[in-house]
Length: 245
Image (cartoon, rainbow, N blue to C red; front, side):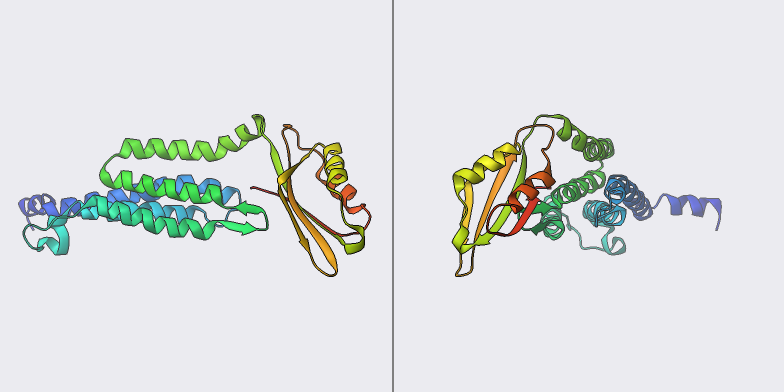
């Protein structure tokens, strides 16, 4: 091939679009890895592979739909066009199912919300890269990464209340008294949320389930409260868990 042939080959619109799409998905993969590394560092199930794949795939779908003339090797039917808004809608719907899979609920404790939200954000990063908003995608990557690294520390500094989910099981002949229970919990720096109180009665035992919270920045002694509750007359079992994670 002559230099002229190589020049013609390099100027081919199909090749140009293909190279541009390849660079786009590589860039999206790198941005997804940056955001996902924080999750890997903290030992979460979703890490750099999940985030990289989500971002890369979102970008690939968007960039491909933007070049309908290059579909099927440039032999697509005349007048063929893609609708990016429908693709974005499909991406968001699919990511919703993925995010639902990483949210875990165990008792009163819920985990995975931050991971789900960040996966949603990284899909938006891929969409922005695919649409050509590279600077915006980089900014969103930076904000997402800094947000997951720094906002957790900010939450610990700002005044907030900490919630506990408490489950007490006692014998039928030594039922608990709400007033005394509330007083005991207050002695440990917590307040019983009466609206959350649930009582289950069986022929053998009575179980109380409720929330307790504190507005102090320093969380009161978790073990001390558990020990005091366990020493109440007739208690058969005590379970304490953070109500949110």
